[in-house]
Image (cartoon, rainbow, N blue to C red; front, side, top):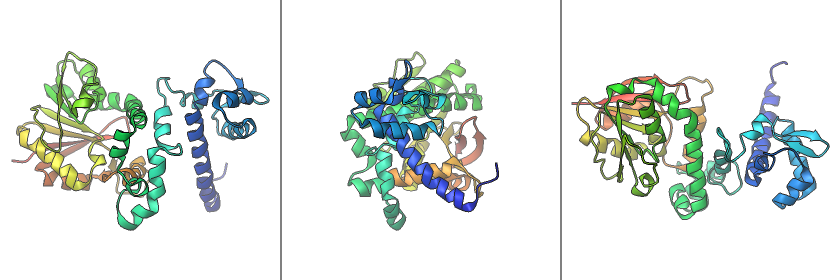
Amino acid sequence: MSAATPEEQILGIVNNHWQSCCVGAAAQLELADMLADGPLHADILAERTKTHAPSLYRMLRALESTGIFTQTAPGVFGNTPASDCLRRNLPGSNWAWIRFTLCSGAPVFEGWRGLMLSLKNGRPGFDQVTGENAWQHMQSNPETYSIFNEAMRDLSTSISPAVAVALDWSQYPMIADIGGGIGSQLVSILEAHPSCRGILFDQPNVVAEAPEHGQIERVGGDFFKDVPVRADAYVMRWLLHDWSDEESVAILTNIKKVASPSARLMLVESVIPETPDFDMGKWMDLNMMMMATGKERTAAEFRDLLDRAGFALEQIVPTPSPLSIVVAKPKA
């Protein structure tokens, strides 16, 4: 096929928006889970989801044209490998991430309605659309917060092992995961390097939900106040992108206070290339602009950020995932 014309490229973006709305609706209705045991007629799906059958059929027919669902007989739809990714409890599922981003009323969906506001004043779109920040919203909406945590765990499925094999972590006998949630990344590192031990540091209510692990000590706290742990390596995965430069420097400074001269800081983040090439980090950066005070950063921006907190950038290690490991050492 010939390359798309400029007009086709722009119109394709419009179509992509429509497709994403339909994928979000399919996830919200949990259609793929209903088809887990085999194809069903659109009328049955409509009855189970309390939707209008002809309208649901039209959406399923459109999604089928993209490879999401398949029509096994007139009006009868089944799953495809693509729609299987929308099944809630299937390994490799994207259901929670879709629910958090593409469904009407979901935080990211609502946050992006504030794009023009963010462009005008630099403040997070979500805050301006809803009147509260995303963290406050999730704390007051337990179901949304649960979906967010589920989405983070699903995204970790491929990222955690990629980070675990990207470095020889065995050179760091004690590894602290700062803001490490329930410990999926730390567990992955320790499973790949069983000679190491770990410290999981996050808010007390978060680490309390972490599964018991013989090599991990759980420590509750607030990294904006202090980081009362000593380790050979301090890991922070996809954490600083949530926070502004000033907030990030505050977090890093608290680590600098306790880090020994031989310790290493490991920031697992997107590193945006300074080229015009497509990079997912550039788009996640806009998502952070909508949802939080943070951003994705270039290598130069990481170097400056680290310098302000008393660290020196040592190297950037790519991983078999969209994220890299920014390695830094404390400055004397």
